[in-house]
Length: 458
Image 1 (spheres, rainbow, N blue to C red):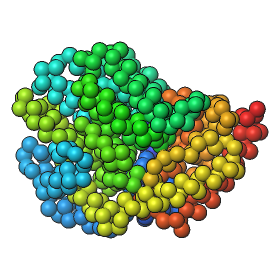
Image 2 (cartoon, one colour):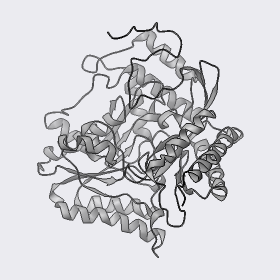
Image 3 (spheres, one colour):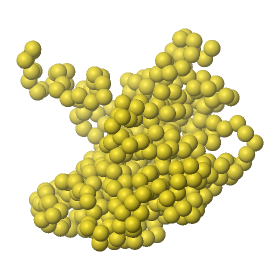
Image 4 (cartoon, rainbow, N blue to C red):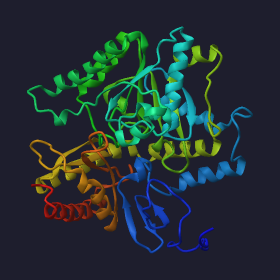
């Protein structure tokens, strides 16, 4: 030991934890609804729901009570030894909410695990059908699908992908439908078709007989900042997958569980994917929980072909599933799907007003309460701000100091472009908007002044 370990009291002690960097944040004291407090009593509004997780807000007593009730019965039951009511009930309820024939549920602990499960189910289905040559899953660039090596191979976010590329079987990519950057004479409908047809071109390039599936976020997450494609895109993608016999996988890790105003975002376009991944808002931060949902036409052949070769220790954990059931109850009882749609539209309108004042706001986009603001050097050309200024990261830090929590990422593949995500819990009310908008506006003023002084706009 080179130094003493300080007593675990107080919030300024040295930490033994490490994550992405050496930066530190205040110690959390408590959280309630859309607000959080540190141990010094400072209040923050959680305008990103953590990492777009806390969909029903913090510390809901109904969820806590349901988890306590489950703890008093059994905190853990391994899936190979016992079934449990919490998992069985939640599986039935998810199957009832899922579109089309999505009726079989496989529980996991998080989004990366959910996507990894989708990959493995798709591959084992191909093997069960005698199509061993199908090994490729096409995804989009930019995109984010998780941090495990399998999910990372699908992810189109260069800084996260590049260090591990030699360790992975890289998967083919097509451009994400970033129509807001296009400067052509096409209609939105035709742009959607144009981007969707890029999938067909890639399938043909790879060889249709080798392609296993296509994975997409129905509304982009952190990699593209709440990107919504033209309506025409979704149906055309479904047609192409059907035409070439490949599986359409929807990554609804972030969009699922109500954030866009529907329980699953695919409902906005009437699309039934072949396999669906969901997590984050499924248990809304009360416990680690995610799920893969698939039809029996896929699950059945896999189970009959030697079983599903995959699993996690905490799959179907009764405590996590009890939280998931309680979160579903809160969503229904409090009308949170409807509130996400209405409050999301109203908040998006307010964010759009900021672009009248700040020319560095190039785009405001999203659906429901999955919203993002993109920052640019020039709004006409959509030229990004020089990456050296770390504009979005700086905005997040300035806002944090003002008691506003938002979330940033690079927009254009990871190295360039800036956006911040504004995604408060689905419980947010219009009368609470000023707690977001006032500090956000002040942070934008401060950032704009800093960037102008640094010559970022010249």
